[in-house]
Amino acid sequence: MRKTKRKNKLLIAVLIAISVCIAACGKKGEEDNPGTAGGILENGAKGLDVIAASGIPSPTPVPSPTPTMPPEPAPDLHEGKKQGMLNGEWIDEDVVEHRPYAVMLNNIKVASPQSGIGQADIVYEALTEAGITRFLALFSEIGKDTPAAARLGSVRSARHYFVSFADEYDAIFVHFGETTYAKKKMDKLKIDHITGMYGVGVSSFYRDKSIKAPHNAFASLEGIENAVKKGKFRTEYEEGYKSHFKFYAENTVPEIVTKSSEKTDGLPALGVQTPATKITLGFSDYIKPYFLYDAKNEVYMRYQFDGEHVDYNTKEQLAFKNIIIQLVKEWNIDKNGYQTMDIEKAEGTGFYITNNTVQPVTWKKDEGKRFMRYYSEDGEELIINPGKTYIAVFPINREKHIAIE
Picture (spheres, rainbow, N blue to C red):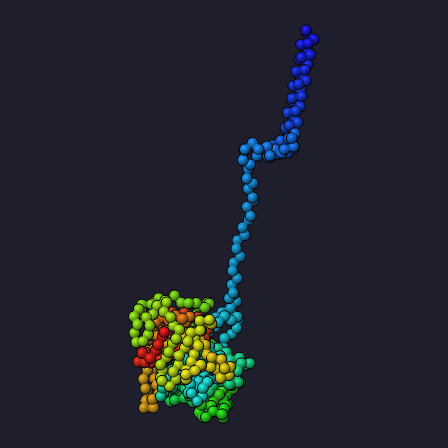
């Protein structure tokens, strides 16, 4: 009996030892296979399978967050560049801009079309006499390899208000003859000028004999440059000179702030949505100039004499990004019908047209200080688009002959 008890105690001890060993082995498996709920069981199932089978939801793996890189700054397309004085186009900032040339161009039908006008950055148009207009074409540069370098014209005589316009830009004025009023204005403003009638410019021009005089005088770049050297004219802008144009950095449809709301004198009510697809300027019944908006290229194409207005050299139609109509008080100065206008120290109104929009503007000029600025109706200085600009200096007493539609 006592032996049996001993055997039972020994059996119990052995069973306890076996249980401890099994528990130790199970713990070792868990250490060897962390996260597997005991590794592989006897039936071959993995621990996760058992969890799934039990109805306990499996933990959803959380992906590691992808680090977000800060966006690269947009490249500055205009770094190291500046905008040109006349056209607002971007050029290298180390390029020295030379004084522009301001050239008097004919606008009579027998002498049309003009040569080189399509290369001008700014074109002024104003009445001279008998319903005829002339152009003042301003060039920031006349490339030596361009058609205008060989044929620019026909060049005609100066009028005193064109002298004043040229001086606004610190330009070298190119003409062939002048009225006594223009001569007095050139002397007063001390403007550097080149004429084919006398002085350093007599050899700067040539005659095209296929055209009747006096409409057949043409200039060449070589002739102009030779006159500049002979006259010892300054070739760079006067120190401190600032253009009277401010330009947008890129092509822009202006946000128009306007007080005008009623249609008057054939002009449309003005506002942000006002279209300006056709501009008619009734200088006279002789020229019949107008512009049509080319929506594809976002420019205004010029017409006159019942047809497209082209450059004789290139046969390309004139196109302008900007149109400015500057209304002035204008009248006959003498019995010859020569014109004069109130622009020496004056102000007035007008319109700025670009990208199929039109807005009213004001202008102020002080000729003695070479000051000229345009302003939008909110009183801020007008900003215009980069590109070619046409300026009509138009008599205010003929405003009803302007149509914007």
